[in-house]
Figure 1 (cartoon, rainbow, N blue to C red):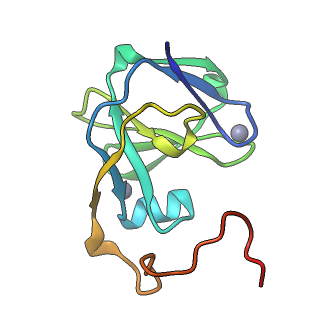
Figure 2 (figure 1 turned 120 degrees about the horizontal axis):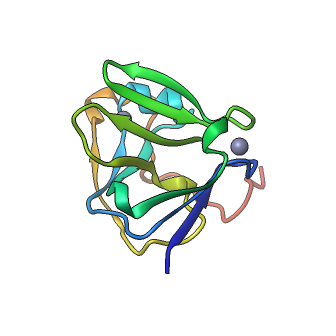
Length: 132
Ligand SMILES: [Zn+2]
Ligand SMILES: [Zn+2]
């Protein structure tokens, strides 16, 4: 049973048969900007295990470092996948999955790029928007 994923607006959708371990939280500066978040979550998917369902032709691309191409939905801006020269896999932006692939994050990488305001541990947690 494949796992489905999509961008925020739904123009782009895909399915994967399996997500490879390890699932990683990447703190690198280009992920931070690309995801507009303190870190992105990424895992490899074997090319044969990845299929576009719709919107592949609508994706826009940005080469964020030499050989590393990030693909985005041009409507909503979701960063969906990336590719890297020499890596025979789809670099899946795991947070765009709509289904739970079962894998769990195993590590944080590129923490050398952390920004001073990134201090996730010990903060208040709210199931929905902050009541304050
Ligand atoms: Zn979209
Ligand atoms: Zn990164």
